[in-house]
Amino acid sequence: MNLVPARSRPEMRERTIAIVGAGLIGTGIAYELAKRGASVTVFDRAEPARAASWAGAGMLAPFSEEMPDPAMLALCRASLEAYPEFVAELRERTGLDAQFLRHGTLHVALDERGLHDLVARAAAYAANGGEVSVLDRAQTLEREAAVSRGVAGSVFIANEAQIDNRRLGRALVAGCAALGVRFEHTDEFALETDARRVRGLRSKRGFVAADTVINAAGAWAGAIDGVPLAARVPVFPVAGEMLAIAVPHAFARALIWHGHTYLVPRSDGRLLVGATVLERGFDTRVTAAGLSALLGAALHAAPSLGTFAVVESWAGLRPGSPDQRPFLGATPLEGYFVAAGHYRNGILLTPITARAVADLVLDGRSDVALGAFAVTRTISQRGLTALEALAAAGASANA
Ligand SMILES: Cc1cc2nc3c(=O)[nH]c(=O)nc-3n(C[C@H](O)[C@H](O)[C@H](O)COP(=O)(O)OP(=O)(O)OC[C@H]3O[C@@H](n4cnc5c(N)ncnc54)[C@H](O)[C@@H]3O)c2cc1C
Image (cartoon, rainbow, N blue to C red):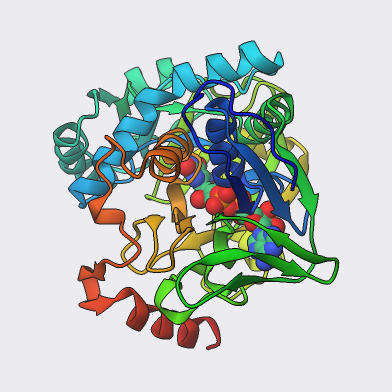
């Protein structure tokens, strides 16, 4: 790899940094490192920003997720707060607007029992920091006229947002390129190490030396060849299917019901309907059962959608982690870092992950609290170490 001189950090030793994975997490980290003057190459075997980062819905909704985990909630909230500046700076640098919109999220209840449950959950949304209001039937229809006339009421969370993640991916790739980050297509490769530290990456095309390698390989992060057992992470794929209906201006904001089913309007006139949650290995087929479930739920919530065209369907692989926290930071192998396992919140967590991992790589520390996300943590939920969880995840992925 060629080295470019450090720009903003004259004291920084020149170093070669390789990132595996050009999703939002990998390109976000590359962007942040390059802004601080580092020389970075991003390796991917596919097109940049096309995997889960392209497939996601772009909801930035930490309160709707009902996270019981204070560390994860704090990280998600910090990332949501970082978003406006992150996107504005990227727009200034590239001319590409990723459309961060803080229009709030509306949780609708389609019957009285659902409303009872929803109102009970509203206290938890508020306790987590959501700006919550409970709306009756008339107020709900006034806000979103396309909702079923049978709606019983809703809960509105005003301080949640959304981003067009496909645009964000394009903007980050352009931002990286503008800062001199190189993108390399690679097929199979393996991490090369000595007894103590990482040395680089070896592929069919030869050896690329790197004194820092960051694994940002999304759902594949647990399967990078050549990684010593002690530095591996138990990340596994969780498939999600989605579809889009061409229906301009049906809704002003993201609409959620039955927990995991949602509608997200895009400015290009598509209404996204998501998403299934399936542990079935690295399978990205869109199934008839998945589409049927999504369409059935969407038409139940908004029957008027039935006359519009379905224009797209797709599936992606969320990078799952046994305790639903990402793995962020250094590993027992010197020079080898991980930023993976963001599961349902990787789009939300892109700005904070980019900053925190760049801090760790360049300064060895970060003011973002990362202890709960350490690669070597005990997976407390199931009393397993990361290594034991890796074995368990391998067993379930093959099931
Ligand atoms: C249906 C669905 C809906 C979602 N909705 C939301 C949402 O509303 N809000 C939210 O915050 N998050 C959401 N997510 C989750 C979010 O999309 C992910 O957490 C996030 O995109 C993960 O980003 P990533 O960069 O880690 O992984 P990816 O985007 O998957 O990128 C990983 C990259 O690594 C590359 N790679 C892997 N292995 C190798 C290898 N060996 N060599 C070279 N390259 C390799 C891949 O080709 C890929 O480009 C959703 C996900 C799905 C699937």
